[in-house]
Amino acid sequence: MFDLAKRQSNLGTETAFEVLAKAKELERQGKSIIHLEIGEPDFDTPQHIIDAAKKALDDGYTHYGPSAGQIELRESIARHQSKRQGYDVNPENIVVTPGAKPIMSFSIMALIESGVEAIYPNPGFPIYQSMIEYMGGTSVPMKLEESNGYNADINALENLITDRTKLLIINSPNNPCGSVIPEPDLEKIANIAVKNNLIVLSDEIYKDMYYGDYDHVSITKFPGMRERTIILDGFSKSYAMTGWRLGYGVFPDFLVDEVTRLMTNINSCTSVFSQMAAISALEGSQDSVLEMMKEFTFRRDLVVEGLNSLNGVTCQIPKGAFYAFPNISGTGMTSKEFENAALYDAGVALLSGTSFGEFGDNYVRVSFANSRENLSEAINRLRKIL
Image 1: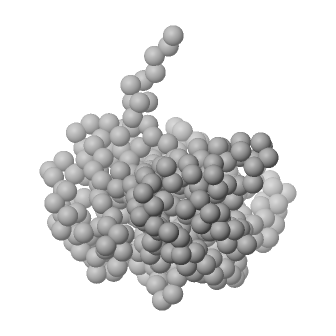
Image 2: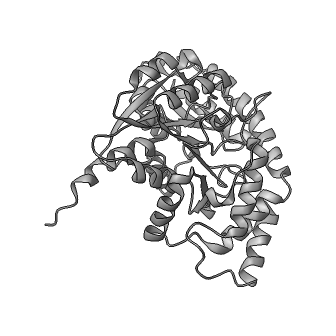
């Protein structure tokens, strides 16, 4: 019998992969499953990016690279971010990682310890809370209110801050709610961060995924924020490159060397030929991104209308990302009961809202990264069990 480190008991998980495993097992048993659980675009990586990866392999990009990332890609990211953010981003402030999760993990590892508090969105991406608690810190949930468009009440947020609060995590567009923080609220959050000398982790992985007239606004546009904000971004969502495992962070000066050392210790470097292909993603045609969002718009409308037609279910219209977050309290089921009924009785894999924190009860997350035909069939299947 061997004992694990005590901190292992603090480590959470990402339930989407657990539900995916259950759904795959049911498929192996011959059951028809419609997958609405995993947060992954169902589109293929654009061909010009694949071709760039093949060329990079032929050109010999098969060896170790710098821990912070290939300078060619960091310069490309800097140009991309400078254009999107409206100010000059220095490639020296960019660290490339295998996926975007290491940006949040390394940032939390570098900042959080026992006695330190970090505020995170709830419902929110579960790895925020998991890593805060793994590092011995205190995770403080910032409730996202359905009545406020799944955004935080700013006064309630300010009341969460103590003299032990060090880090504030925001995510817009939001996973799982599909919500977008209004620019006036974002400015108020920036003022709170400056006033209380907080570091902000701004998860902007869905920055290309807006609907209607919405466009991306980063909290770094406000005074005093660039020197205290970590921007988390990557290639998985915008370019359907989930399996490539490519993410990056734009770090304030004081964190660049620390996060790079973590990369050296844990990963050595990110796949080099993949990084060279990522340049093509940023600098090549963006038509695939536009076409994907055009299709997601159709799917969003189909899913929201369908969910609102179900007994006991109400659903707001998502403003970003590719998730709907319906309220299922009228069905009389808990979120977990609804998840299980959907999977085992209807053959629809979706996620309980509690997978995203305590304030997710009475809700479920539906990813509409599936075909229109499958989405329509999923609604019909859910209607039968309700």
